Length: 108
Image (cartoon, rainbow, N blue to C red; front, side, top):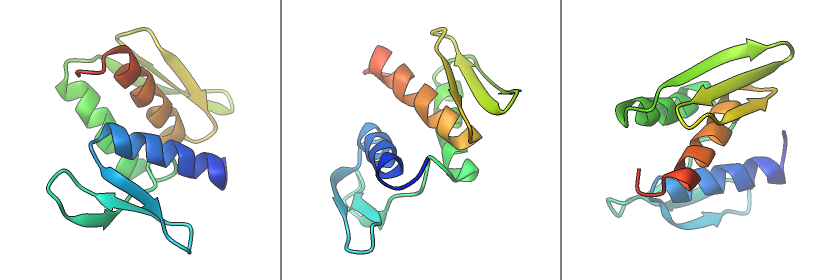
């Protein structure tokens, strides 16, 4: 992935996490107001495995059984709702699975 697709995915994740007023600065970075009211930059969930891991933690804490594995040249994430998301980067696969879970269970 690269460029606009990354920013779109990052924006969707941020909105699902409760960030409000997501904006892009002139350098291409996203920032927003956290639910606490603080303004902060939004992590690169789609490429930063440490940031994406926070999404896996949320899935696990919601009693969602999650597995991540290498599938040839791609990474696969499967969770309780039987969504099976694949991407070249493991963080991107985690993001896609997280969004699918949130869309299927919006109150989760």
